[in-house]
Image (tube, rainbow over all chains, first blue to last red; front, side):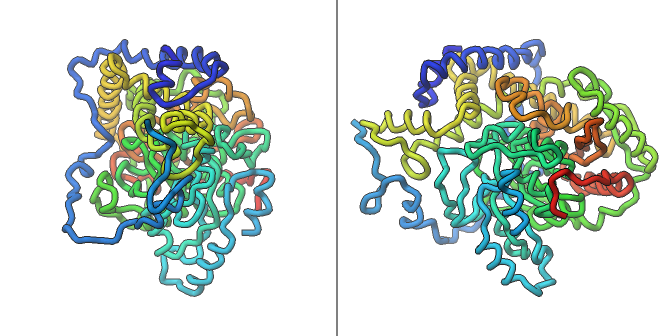
Length: 93
Length: 454
């Protein structure tokens, strides 16, 4: 695994020391998970999600009744930087 | 409250102690004996949202975050009269098996303060084991309630997937995450489960399955119950002390009238590999939201938006979280998806089929909870894979979605607690609590930890 490339895909600015630390650790973990290759799974259906049979048939639709939402003040209350009702971030372009 | 404050400098199980809030709640429910949990003190893991209180997930990236709403489980506890004492320490984003990956310091095991309490819900386990509260909430993705329960000598339940609403539980791996419950006894766990279980319109994965009276089944006779034992899993990597204790517990169940049968779980040994593909894939997606824009920590002085993302995440996450985000990103990346993620989903189905087949012949499956007793602080922190193998007996219940409970079953030669695990069929929490209660009543541990406020 190219740790630098994967870190970039994951939006992590990792240091050279971290590359040296993670490279052998990740290699060992990837080697471990590859033991699944010894199983023949051609005829097995993949299990999607964690739902039980009962969970899958549970009716999740509800009446379309308007209810209160979080609101602008609460939604912005944890922002590192907020200006006139908006989240403020560094320049995009 | 006094006990929490007294022990915390030594054990570090609480990240925040909510003095005023708890007093207000306690006064409000004083004399309200019609409420099922009136005045019961409860501690809550710091990845479960509690309105107006810090909810840090043990991470620097949320070090200053205050939740803006309550989790459904918290709403239900409040309505039942429970008193929340505080928020508990945990491995960062629930990723770990020792509580050493918390950004706010490790937690110490009250049986031996040079040892870990297990994880990731280490703080919630220690809050119960040290006698501060009778019950607490944790969370489970691969064993994060059962493993620390075993290492701390208490009861820990992971319910069926969909039994307890995940609304307000900060997401790690959504198809595996559950809220779990610690208690000094099975009865404490039953009290809390009865209140927080049940369908919630705010969580579309919570199931509409009736919630029984869990206390009603606690005292039932266990003779006639059938317990399956997967002998093939009692081999390599299992400590001799743990093996002896768990083997003895099988005989103890037999003496209570339970019938013991052999079962086979041929794919359980692949559980860790499947887990570290699926859990990290889901985590890499769920943790993409921590970017410094809307809440939590933001790195200073980034010249542009992309640099802000990169620097915030680099400085905000610890090493274990970064490893798992990278592994998840890798297994989902173009060209690798079928080899890893798709393969893991198929083996996950095989793990689930093992259980479905086994439960045709038994009511519960008995194994050790953890292959070892509490290990020394620092012993596994440089070896991520060795740490992952701590969850070898617990992860497959999360993969299949079935409930499981850890119950104390003895002490090792050096006086550390050992836990047995009972895995049940879907929605059979009542059967597990019945078996756990019968066991702890007939074979109590009978010893308190070294650090304990009774």
